[in-house]
Image 1 (cartoon, rainbow, N blue to C red):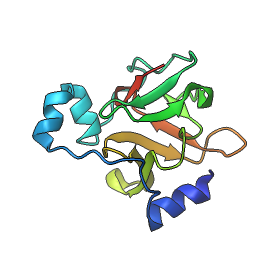
Image 2: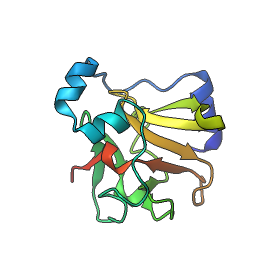
Image 3: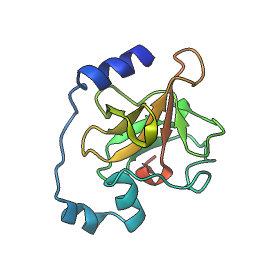
Image 4: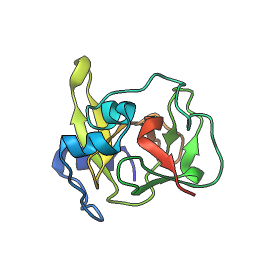
Amino acid sequence: MNWHDVISYANNGNPKPPRVIEKTDAEWGQVLSAEEYRVMRQKGTESAHSGEHCNVFEAGTYACASCDEPLFDSSQKFESGSGWPSFTEPLRTGVVRYDMDTTYGMTRVEVSCNVCGGHLGHVFPDGPAPDGLRFCVNSVSLKKIS
């Protein structure tokens, strides 16, 4: 996957998710903490360097905090200096959704869980070689499952 693929998904449609989970806002409010709800359902951002997964580089898999869908592998995690967990690619095609985000006077690509729609963060074309991607993810949007 590369930046061209990301832009193509954001502009032309996303890959099919492995499954779909739908809940009302009230149902999400019952299963998520207040901070998880603010970030994942209201597209908020946690403070830089505040999340529990920022400086953790142990082997394992990171899943969506809302629906437990495995999203990222620790082998693709790197220190970006941004203050948020950063990954070079998702675990597999179809688990992450890409949408153009033009809020705050910027044009960015938002990434969300493609299974439940939970906001994860953004992807940028300034990551390491070979593909140059940096998935900048809110720590509160993730849970380490293995």
